[in-house]
Length: 400
Image (cartoon, rainbow, N blue to C red; front, top):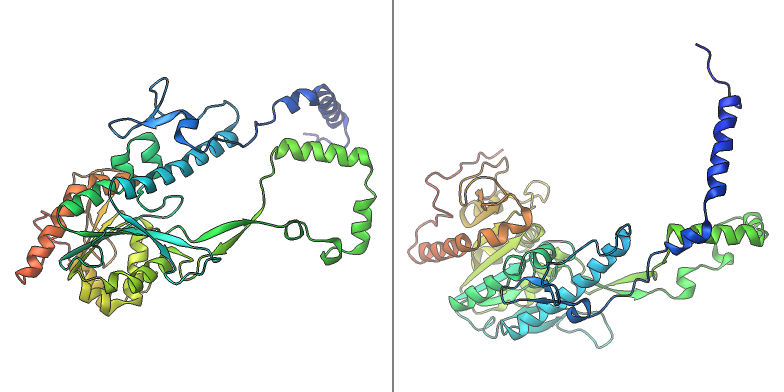
């Protein structure tokens, strides 16, 4: 079979057809399809949403749940709108922690100057003075902040499943002091100055000849290029630089800082952790760095679909042994709640959270976690090894 040669009749036809297609494009019509300004309300009321008596986010006028695709064919704009709403949700949860849960906001670092970046955590009035029990809550990674398990659940389901508020209220009812970490608040963003955003030609690594060629580009060519850049990226967002918060620049660093400055100094004889997803990894890192202190003060740890890895994190044998005796990981699974789930890693026992959805594991295991803590405390007081769940058989791990 003869092969088409470059520049042959078929290729010329394709080129002609492409040119004809491009000539039909109405640039003015395309410009009309530019996305709207990325300017959104800064209150729930401005978005015309509110939380009803069941803690569900609903439209004020229609009563309908949140609609992501507010404008069709504008996914980027819809995503930015969702993120703007998410920031309002974060502030709303902060407000609930203070007003509904009566927690107080504590700024970090504790010795921060007026001008340096700051983070904060929340704690109950008796967090440092409660001599019996203290509960510490650690969320996962991403956009979530103090008081949240999953933003998606808060927006699409309800406050109970998506926030830590049920844990906080139940803990306080049962006599725990409470500390809520804010592991993802690691830096502030500062807008770049014009000099930072656009380095001067003199400081550029480009050869002088290349810069001169750029400066000689015809105005029409620049205009056309600017148009296509505008259509590709209609709204260039402001460029920012991240200024990290001292001693709190990562979830792991934050956990160690809060331990050193608050948890280790608290009066409670029994400290309990609930750590979701990446929060579990942060706890294991805390153990690695403060092993003796953690063992002396922590009674039990409930992990919910934790992403920790004792091998990658290089947790030593004594840490793994302690975790097997004092931790339990409620993982996403199709099995009924508290059913034993096999693990290939020699760390803590794993049981089903009663859901296959990662973000729901903390909420679905809620009752079991408090039962686990109660049994762990009772076992400690009676000098008996605690049983993580109702399982009849405990997983045995071999040391490799």
